[in-house]
Length: 213
Ligand code: ADP
Ligand code: ADP
Ligand code: ZN
Image (cartoon, rainbow, N blue to C red; front, side, top):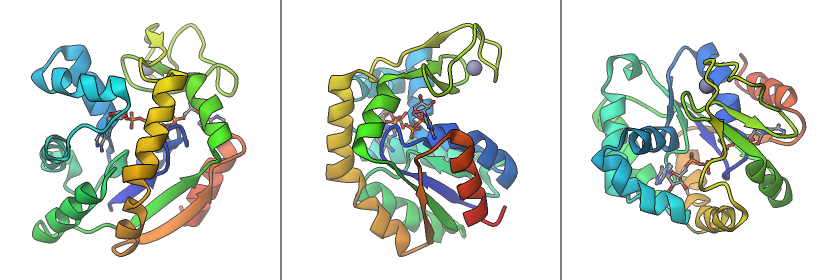
């Protein structure tokens, strides 16, 4: 089963992904997490992605699609994945649907998280991220303890691109390139529009109910 978490930066995709992926029995594939891991490991891909990420722009489609194709061919992904942060442009969406068609796979469902821009800014500037496992916290809404509850790491940081200026650039990029992805996905899969406001558990319940989980 291939499911997509869609929504603007800070809408709660990563927060909702873990339980949802577990329930669906598929791996969570987050392109942002893959780029950040490469950045930490100092790989050529990480070095290339860094300048785009720091500026709040998109990493080029060809680079991004190549890493997704690699990920989708790994053994644990053959039965489907939960996408988070991909596709993020119309060319990426068209590439993926063509790739699915030529590999006998299909897009099943899209969870589109709707959150107003004011709440987004507050969520992103208060976000804290585990540098080891990418789990996210929020200084007010989901305060981290001394160690990450998911992996035990003490390395809980603020992402370099979670500053007010870069967030604005990412929101502009979302409006310019990513919003138009939803109609493309809608042509291939069932889209569930979910109210992403309210507490984390309430949003999870809405998602699970929409997907009959
Ligand atoms: P967010 O919390 O904004 O949803 P992500 O972790 O998904 O952040 O992405 C962080 C950055 O990684 C993006 O601003 C972009 O530079 C890069 N990135 C992630 N996914 C993609 C993608 N599908 N295409 C291009 N760039 C991407
Ligand atoms: P995305 O992956 O879409 O960029 P995240 O899941 O990282 O978004 O969430 C962004 C920030 O908002 C994080 O700090 C997270 O803890 C917080 N957050 C997520 N969902 C909610 C919610 N329902 N209410 C309040 N804060 C939330
Ligand atoms: Zn962790």
